[in-house]
Amino acid sequence: MGRNTRKRRTPLATKAIAASAALALGGGGLIWANFYASAHESSNQTWGGNQTKASTAQVATISCPDVGQKLTNVPNRARQGVATELANLDKQITEAYNRLASTRNAQARDASFVQNAIVGPLKEKRAATIDRIRITIQRSGGSFDNALKQLASCTTRTANQTNAGGEQNGGQQQNGGQQQGGQQQGGQQGQNGQQGNIGGQAGNGPVAADFVDITKVAPNVQGKPRRTGNASTGTFTSRCGVNANKNFNTDNVIVAPGVTNGAHHLHDYVGNQKINAFSSNNTFLQGGTSCQNRNDLSSYYWPVVRIQDGTQEFDQNRDGGGKEGNVGRILTPVQAQIKYVGSPASKVVPMPQFLRIITGDAKTTTNGLANANAHWSCTGFENKVQLTEQYPICPQGSKVVRSFAFQSCWDGQNIDSANHRTHVAFADPASGVCPNGFKAIPQLTMRLVYDIDPPTIENGQVKNAYAVDGFPEQLHKAATDHDDFINVTKNGLANKIANCINRGQNCA
Image (cartoon, rainbow, N blue to C red; front, side, top):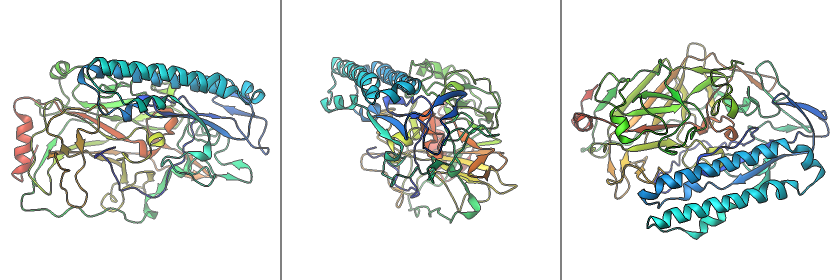
């Protein structure tokens, strides 16, 4: 979006097929219901433990535009109210999905049921909510683009109309279980809990096509930009642990302040220990830290990774956990490296206090890959292969590596923006130069290492699957990985980090 766009992507677009409520922040999401399927299939199949009769020959979807991504000019005074209304859009999509999933028999009897009973009422609710957003913005002196009113309408789609890249795919359900001879791969619930054609312990992914043997992937890592004479070559490492104390929640104070379960998936937290939906800048300063450097009160948080081995975790029956398709055994990283690095083209300025940055996009299945910034690899392969749209199957003795490189350019004025993206940007990948009007800041990089038994693919199904937590309609795709950061320091630490990097030193 805007300047904050990643162009380097693998060519394979991921097909989206989900089985659970769509709860995408900002009111955007794909709502999926499996109507099972072909003439070759049994008339009764298991879906989430319920027996449902086949009612049509396709997978139906409701696609709702992502309102939050379009709101780029919201006055500061209006942002809390707007965030609350965006959460209402999320709730409306959830309710619509639940109705879609629970009325299959009615849909089979009445071809107009989805439009009349689900899509139409959903549009009316969304229109009223978008209008409240308009009023909130205008009362605070802001301007509202009336074209956004058109985002109230949602559409129904079959599974072959939409994938992660937002492209057509010739009718094939790529990465969602390709159709062969009228039957869908993915099968019935197996030993690893896979169901339907979507796979996964909760029936909403991942599937076999979401994994690749990293030893069979051609090298794809590009060289770094050449350093100029003004490059800032130092590093600063902050040691903050791996969340061994299990500081979790399903909030997201950046995107959904004041909204419980605003993330709809579970986060690991290191650094600041007092982060939830109701935290404020003053709270952050009182939060304490897991970092060895007690002046680093920054919050570093990311979605947990789970092994889908049938384990029922503590959140199996909670929002953001099992109730939203995030299931399996939660893994703690064996290593979490937090390092700030410099710019190959210039010196860096200190990060401003309370700067918020989100890197990646939790909703690539809905939004496409423009803001995807996931990097998956294996120890021993990181300098050769980085994956965005698939999880690696690592060879024996190698560990899974999940890494992030945050935006390294700042607009020089704002610690956040209405869509949480446009106040920061990526440097040009070829030159390392920031866009016009932006300043280079220390680039936050994170490297998370996990000890995971390699998944295996048997008869078109993945066993011992692992996946990142996410919105249920995103199918636990690798591309949805993302990371969040709030800069909070004291006693001049932000200046010390910048000075260390500018002097070419390696500090910790």
